[in-house]
Image (cartoon, rainbow, N blue to C red; front, side, top):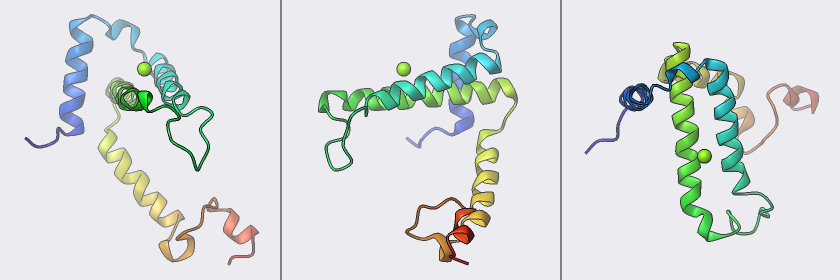
Length: 123
Ligand SMILES: [Mg+2]
């Protein structure tokens, strides 16, 4: 069975929301806040981990990482649906911009922001 597309997942999220009559609560603002909350719940699972240590700290949290990642996607798909954003197209446009900002030959293996390369005498 092929992976579902973003459009198929969005349709399923919309059906889930409408069946519960929750769309009345789902303004873009509220959904953006919910997205931030879910991202924070994901981040919390990694709180106090060391870079070289296990991540998350407790392996019992591993299934929760997938759950919280799914919550983030659910909120993002719902937000984009409500805001009329074609997320797949938006991602393609963003990647094209990022490819221009961060040419491989200039940034490979380095983690500076695009405007910092010149400031650090790299150009
Ligand atoms: Mg959650």
